[in-house]
Amino acid sequence: MDPWQDLLARAEGELALAREGRWDELAAAGAERARLAAALPAPAPQARPLLERLALVQEQLIALLTAARAETARELGTLSRGRGAVRGYAPVSAAAGGWVDESH
Image (cartoon, rainbow, N blue to C red; front, side):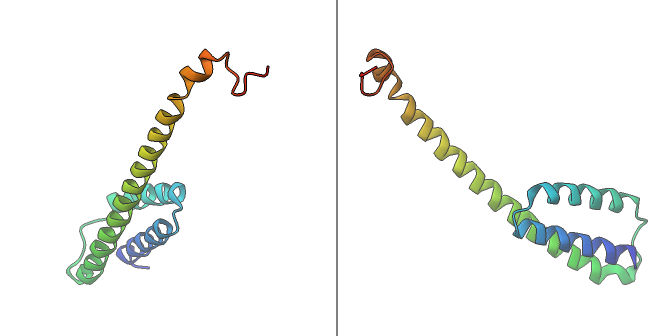
Protein backbone atom coordinates (compact mmCIF):
# COMPACT_ATOMS: atom_id res chain seq x y z
CA MET A 1 0.00 0.00 0.00
CA ASP A 2 1.16 3.53 -0.76
CA PRO A 3 2.40 5.12 2.50
CA TRP A 4 0.21 8.18 1.95
CA GLN A 5 -2.81 5.95 1.35
CA ASP A 6 -1.94 4.14 4.59
CA LEU A 7 -1.79 7.45 6.41
CA LEU A 8 -5.21 8.41 5.04
CA ALA A 9 -6.66 5.05 6.08
CA ARG A 10 -5.27 5.53 9.59
CA ALA A 11 -6.75 9.04 9.80
CA GLU A 12 -10.14 7.71 8.69
CA GLY A 13 -9.82 5.03 11.37
CA GLU A 14 -9.17 7.72 13.95
CA LEU A 15 -12.23 9.59 12.75
CA ALA A 16 -14.32 6.47 13.27
CA LEU A 17 -12.91 6.06 16.79
CA ALA A 18 -13.75 9.69 17.59
CA ARG A 19 -17.30 9.29 16.31
CA GLU A 20 -17.68 6.29 18.62
CA GLY A 21 -16.17 8.12 21.60
CA ARG A 22 -13.31 5.63 21.94
CA TRP A 23 -10.90 8.24 23.27
CA ASP A 24 -8.18 5.97 24.68
CA GLU A 25 -7.89 4.08 21.42
CA LEU A 26 -7.96 7.35 19.51
CA ALA A 27 -5.02 8.72 21.48
CA ALA A 28 -2.92 5.64 20.73
CA ALA A 29 -3.92 5.63 17.05
CA GLY A 30 -3.13 9.32 16.70
CA ALA A 31 0.30 8.88 18.24
CA GLU A 32 1.05 6.02 15.88
CA ARG A 33 -0.11 8.00 12.85
CA ALA A 34 2.06 10.97 13.88
CA ARG A 35 5.04 8.67 14.28
CA LEU A 36 4.50 7.18 10.83
CA ALA A 37 3.92 10.57 9.22
CA ALA A 38 7.18 11.91 10.64
CA ALA A 39 9.07 9.08 8.93
CA LEU A 40 7.57 9.68 5.48
CA PRO A 41 9.53 11.43 2.75
CA ALA A 42 8.17 14.45 0.93
CA PRO A 43 5.07 13.46 -1.04
CA ALA A 44 5.15 13.08 -4.79
CA PRO A 45 2.90 15.43 -6.80
CA GLN A 46 0.48 12.57 -7.56
CA ALA A 47 -0.18 12.24 -3.81
CA ARG A 48 -2.02 15.58 -3.81
CA PRO A 49 -5.58 14.11 -3.87
CA LEU A 50 -4.71 11.86 -0.94
CA LEU A 51 -3.24 14.76 0.97
CA GLU A 52 -6.32 16.89 0.31
CA ARG A 53 -8.53 14.08 1.60
CA LEU A 54 -6.20 13.67 4.58
CA ALA A 55 -6.55 17.38 5.36
CA LEU A 56 -10.35 17.09 5.20
CA VAL A 57 -10.37 14.09 7.53
CA GLN A 58 -8.06 15.95 9.90
CA GLU A 59 -10.44 18.94 9.93
CA GLN A 60 -13.35 16.63 10.75
CA LEU A 61 -11.33 15.00 13.51
CA ILE A 62 -10.44 18.37 15.01
CA ALA A 63 -14.11 19.42 14.91
CA LEU A 64 -15.17 16.25 16.74
CA LEU A 65 -12.43 16.63 19.34
CA THR A 66 -13.33 20.28 19.88
CA ALA A 67 -17.00 19.40 20.36
CA ALA A 68 -16.14 16.56 22.74
CA ARG A 69 -13.89 18.85 24.74
CA ALA A 70 -16.64 21.45 25.02
CA GLU A 71 -19.11 18.79 26.16
CA THR A 72 -16.65 17.53 28.76
CA ALA A 73 -16.08 21.06 30.03
CA ARG A 74 -19.84 21.56 30.27
CA GLU A 75 -20.24 18.32 32.23
CA LEU A 76 -17.41 19.27 34.58
CA GLY A 77 -19.05 22.62 35.16
CA THR A 78 -22.30 20.88 36.03
CA LEU A 79 -20.47 18.61 38.48
CA SER A 80 -18.73 21.57 40.04
CA ARG A 81 -22.03 23.40 40.55
CA GLY A 82 -23.55 20.23 42.02
CA ARG A 83 -20.71 19.88 44.51
CA GLY A 84 -21.18 23.50 45.51
CA ALA A 85 -24.84 22.84 46.20
CA VAL A 86 -24.01 19.78 48.27
CA ARG A 87 -21.41 21.75 50.23
CA GLY A 88 -24.15 24.24 51.05
CA TYR A 89 -25.78 21.54 53.21
CA ALA A 90 -22.60 20.73 55.14
CA PRO A 91 -22.89 23.43 57.83
CA VAL A 92 -26.48 22.43 58.55
CA SER A 93 -25.69 18.76 58.95
CA ALA A 94 -22.55 19.50 61.00
CA ALA A 95 -24.45 21.82 63.32
CA ALA A 96 -27.13 19.21 63.85
CA GLY A 97 -24.61 16.58 64.91
CA GLY A 98 -23.94 15.22 61.44
CA TRP A 99 -27.14 13.18 61.10
CA VAL A 100 -29.88 14.16 58.75
CA ASP A 101 -32.71 13.03 60.99
CA GLU A 102 -30.84 13.59 64.32
CA SER A 103 -32.08 10.20 65.60
CA HIS A 104 -28.57 8.77 66.09
